[in-house]
Length: 389
Image (cartoon, rainbow, N blue to C red; front, top):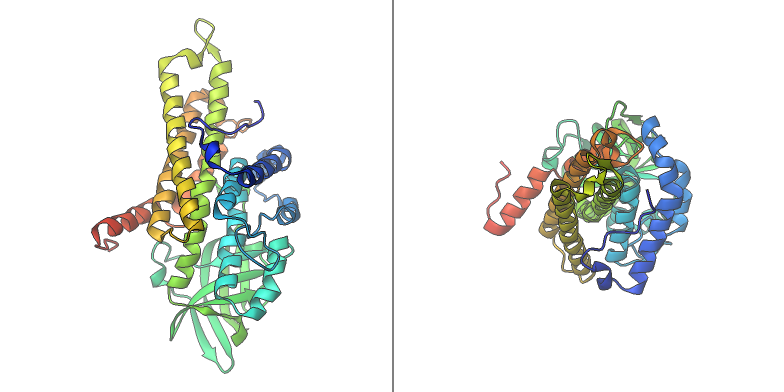
């Protein structure tokens, strides 16, 4: 297959400025040179390419759209373009960067104390330290208000008890941002690896996100100092605000997976010959699938770009992000399925990236709010009536 040149059917590149194009090209080159050569074996072996972490830090990709403490301070459109290119490589790589920036660095920067910011943000930005986000529990995913993890005051400290699961980076993280129920409501805590009573174990047997570390966290009379609490976060608004940041990156990221599937299928259809030795791309049913994919990718590009512009203007709302995540993930998964169909039996081989993207996208559809939850967020926005129960 030829090197990836992007998908720009509707000249959407003309809507990007020089800096945005440069950032995208930098990320695209990184994926082409450093990710594509290793990601198939990483997925096969079920391992994360951790040797790429220092380079992600040097390129400014960790916490890219945050300000200060060594962060690159990029625009949200530039950040989105990075997510797009990284997910073209693999959803697991984009998830790592999303968690590090949107779910660990963002809450520390937004809700943390000066001491927490100074201690953790420079290390997290460089990749010297890794982080994870502990919200989902074995019994409570889509309904975080039902969380059972509790934190109780004990003198000048807090005692945490509970369990979190499906935690990206959990067993390799140096620090965890953990959400727990207290007498004064939901609060966030910065819990360091090695704290007595805190343990993490990796989840095995995944058929999806195999190039990503997924873990369970356990807290058994885990004692943390009062200074570990995030002082600026109280109630569910704190963790939900973090999820909105991550969902924005997902809405951009899945564009990369969709583009990779589409371009793989397009090139394959032009080269593959059948029946009368004509390329299968000459057949109407094949062209119908390619036309659908490029149309939906284009619509999703415009949705993501407008969301990025609104976010840079401070006008993007959580309900907007729900539409971005729901629409673009659905689109990407359908592109993967159609592309697999066009490649026939070759579509299931890991010589091509399609089945890997398809498996990964099944997870992306579920995490950071399922398709159904985002449907209800949009429904509440347009009717004024919540229908979650």
